[in-house]
Image (cartoon, rainbow, N blue to C red; front, side, top):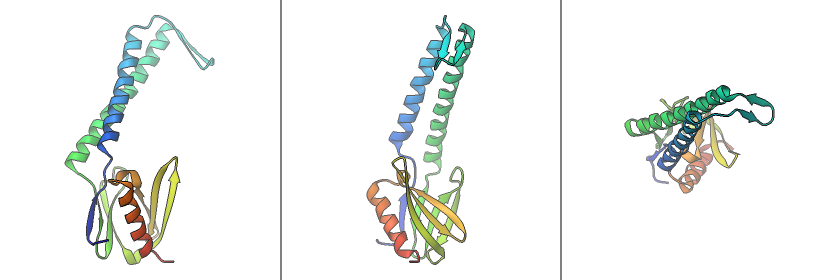
Length: 161
């Protein structure tokens, strides 16, 4: 692999758009159900709601769907305004981290203590431990699987045995 190498590290556009479309449709459908509701609702045979309770339930589900659409819009704005980059430098890895990936960690290859790959529900994660801290590289945020494999193999080759 030729160094330095800058790799986009962002959610894919199709995932953002699919999330917005799915939750937008759910929100619209539940808002429709709420505005046209005249009967009660029984949830799993355990919870019984009257007509007014069912209407409130539908509005709450609609609001939650709208909230996810707003999150997709915020994610779109963040991706446009501040695209994230994973950089494999000549002597260190630069990686976005934190709750909203608002910070960047610079991890010297000599400081890497271990590299471990984990798969959870079909999603692959690469855990890089350095200086007592564990950083996560999420495969789905990289452009494709081949780049993920190249990054994984490169970091494994720089980790202690």
